[in-house]
Image (cartoon, rainbow, N blue to C red; front, side, top):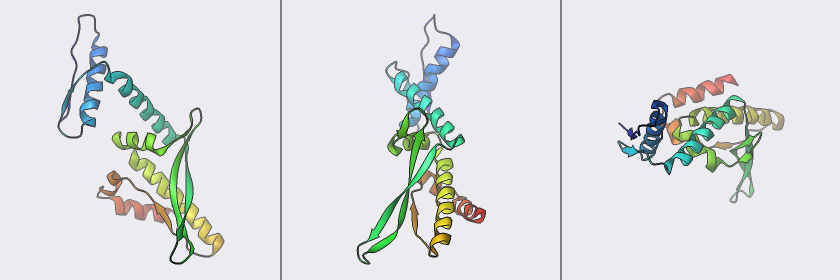
Length: 166
């Protein structure tokens, strides 16, 4: 169990104390493992920014603001193009491009990464199928998957289901 602790002052409302306890709880959970944390005012701006960013990620999933870019892979032994790697990018309508290292850790922390992984897999599979049909040959596409997704017991079934959608 993780515990967030907040002290109250006579002028504090219940909502303020609960908000502070929630911020401390987020800090305890971020420490990985069974921890407790006490609210510190210095934590608040960072935690509020993370919670705000989490909401933006949920919107990005809902409004399909992600894009895939494909980086060519070259086999130096064969001296030939040997497929591509699918790389996710987030094009936020107001903030512009947001780098994966900014949103993926938060998506993992808030349990949103599997939805993102599924979108990446579905999109890469569809685009690869279209390219294969147009080119008349099979391209290899590498896709990065979060360890959280790989450890789910139904990952293989989900992958099979995505393939069936094609």
